[in-house]
Length: 593
Image 1 (cartoon, rainbow, N blue to C red):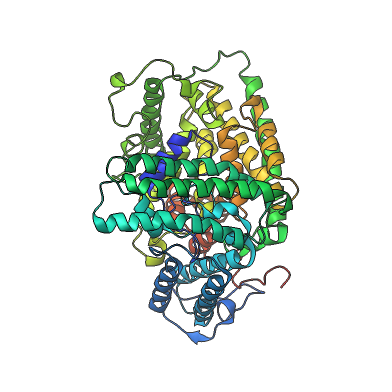
Image 2 (tube, rainbow, N blue to C red):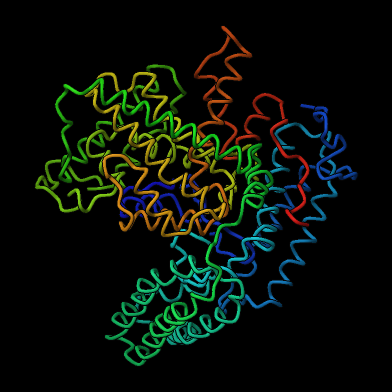
């Protein structure tokens, strides 16, 4: 998820779950041909095209859709090769032409006689094609975002589709003669990538340049470490590594010198944000609706926090975990407790394969016995060093780690067991499922508290849950304002810190930079979906409870919700209820077209 817990924790979970298949972690990295990925039918609602999506007329089969999807994924990955990536205008045009042909074939399919779950899969493919179209028409990271040309691909935004090209740089020496030649050729190609970037960045934004400059020192350090690794076995390659390092530093200097000529703001604008939400995220809500939901939720969260603080004003402070041993003890106890709670309170079916050690085995302290872990205070937990996510977890860990384990890791494990549909099993790209993944995970935080999961724990722990909700607001509100081009990056960081109660967030801390970068370098809905996804989950909850009345069974509702897999919320609702009125069934024209 896009949260600000300690960066080492973030990376551990990211690596455990796989970098190219969103968990929730929501994998959350945009992919494209240009970008690193890594029953009978029902009548359409009034106002929709009742023949088929996007006006298609030819009768088609699901197998044809599955085959087209596989071809589309190969197309997206086809730009990746062992050669240096090419993002010239000619290369971009060629790839866009290929996308257009695939979109035409999809639009020609008639799905009206298909069962709902197959129609849902059609819209998953359509949404993903829309995402690639959006990257060509609007986001254009190769032309707008200087950070796109990073070889790391881990700076919270779109990056080159160059894994095959750059992976050789992470091989361990000594090399065979063949591998040595590949390694040298790759190093020598790096300066050319940054020369290409200077030509391609015709629409660069100053805020995106600021982020690339900030990240460049870490990128340059990669080549410093490569040179050190080469010293023993291949000292003749060290000059090539140093030249690559210098190319990164020269690129950062070029950005700094030219930043004043770039567009001052980098948001995609309200209309484009709404198009992305309607046609890629397949949400019924655009910028205005999302903003209203987030603002009202902000009002509610701060009100509830202050009421809880007043209620608990005579209670002693919570114990603060300051050591690896204390943190791991709290983590293990909390995860086993919440799994038992979900099962015993009949909130959801807990499969036999669920094992909390899958989670904490890859976290702080791994599977070491508690008595073997350091029990002395750690600098990592000191107030001046810890992020807001660490601060509230130090005091009450259960809601935050329930979000990560039940909300995200189990989602990823369930996704890998998804066998009904090859399209769903393949996972979502472009953060398409983020309203679903984040909506579910964030809903768990507070709704389980209301269900009683904290009742046997220190009562002031409820304050930590509302502080966790406030931290979501501190990310979502700047997300909305930056994409509306109402504030710039520096103002967003200040706003993030100002929103967070108790002074628990600072504008210059590492994770604030990282999360504001996540907002700005991705299309709309990155952190805002954390809030709106929860709102949509509760909308579905209310609808089902009203419709079924006394026949509503909480566990059945949650099980059916999860069974649909990691897909946009409106498609989950369609599959559960047969109601597609929240889905934009026909792709809208682009703003201004």
